[in-house]
Length: 332
Image (cartoon, rainbow, N blue to C red; front, side, top):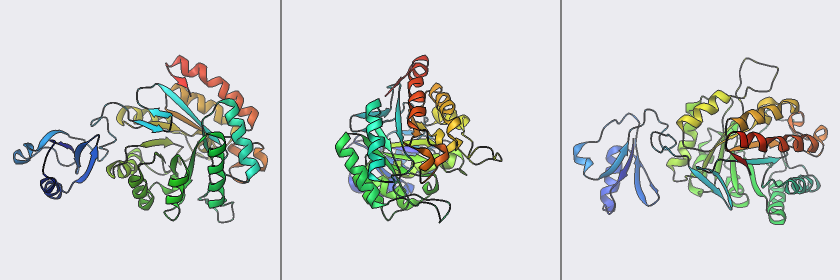
């Protein structure tokens, strides 16, 4: 249950009420909010005098639920806006990893030339194999900070664990919580405290309930700037890397109030399938697309098979505005 308290209540009374209800306490737009278990279905008459309004949610998807807030949340990243009622889809693009200064500068110049305004590239790589490229770490983060300063591109990059989350928060515009870190409460709690926009990727073995509950940790900590990213789940199929769950995207659109981004690159795992999946996601009216592109994918140090070369990316990018227009949206 999400409870909005009446204005002007004594601080001690609010603290006592939160303790009595075993509730998490936060503020939304100046309103004192208590969030307690979804098993609480009604307000005690003695408490009701202190309550302005309350929302009963059927599961512990609460702050992210359309039962609580029917309109989509708007996340602001500088002069960019994601979600809300804007009916626009943000392109986020870049290589899987920051590999060198020349490589990341080349990608940045390419994206700026096309009009793309947000770049994604990994510095801390939580790889499955210990023998794979693990990323440049803080050096890569510094290179991204230089790109942001020199080009004006908004930067999103992944946090691998809580040891460097503060550095990523400080030096980027959006913090990406990767699929393997979705359950890392150290990261989620740090993101909740920061108020920096956060993009949470769905764990490839996670249900939709578990996915959105990860977002609830950030929301209930006071950070309203949360974006969900569907990037494919593990199924019985071995011909693709993962299975892009567009059924799940439809559920998230209907039942949550958070902006939704789709990452077809990690779902497919092979460049040939990424454009069609991206176009399908665009036709669903998602709030963002995350596409991997590299100057020479064959030489990429990570996820080489799924990254589009520049020509392939241009072909995809130029095909999307028509689809966006057909479903009443526009590309940004």
